[in-house]
Image 1 (cartoon, rainbow, N blue to C red):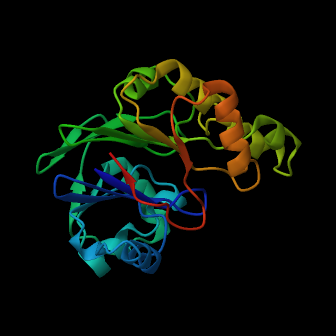
Image 2 (image 1 turned 90 degrees about the vertical axis):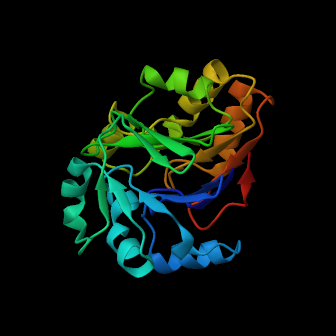
Length: 254
């Protein structure tokens, strides 16, 4: 299994995963040109992608799904409620639309994608577990809070892209208005560096090969601070990467 975060953050999200001959894109929050060019850097052709899966309706995850479909011919998988809510982004015509229900498992060849409902404040948000029969990858961002099912999910994974959105002190002392601070740190917002680190410390098993910290806030976090917090709480037992807001990661492998 090979994974590339093409971008991660409130300015746009898109994750590429290939496993057992299946190629997937998770979310379409960056432009079609950006996704195409960033995949080209690693000799990947976006038109060869088998499916685009949308996690929820927020702009930074859903805005370009229509472009990816029309420009590159990608079939779109999305819940009906998420699709309805995302219409505000003027998605345009999508003929290759496939609805799934939150909690359903999708199959692409020998690869399954489990969808898990989240308490994040999207219309019908989910996170994804990609399983090729050998490895299990979690793409777990926009979580709302650390809900009960997460520990069992983390325990089952070989690798994870995990939300590490904000530092509580930076959020409290920052320039966001009070309502936005409450939204980010509330039960339907995002999880902090320390919450992410404790989740990995308490729930990850010996099978966890690496974790990539994702969806970092520009205003309320830094990559160095996210890594430092995780090392303080988690120690050194899991290799850590950071998905940047500004471009692709290296190819992460399982």
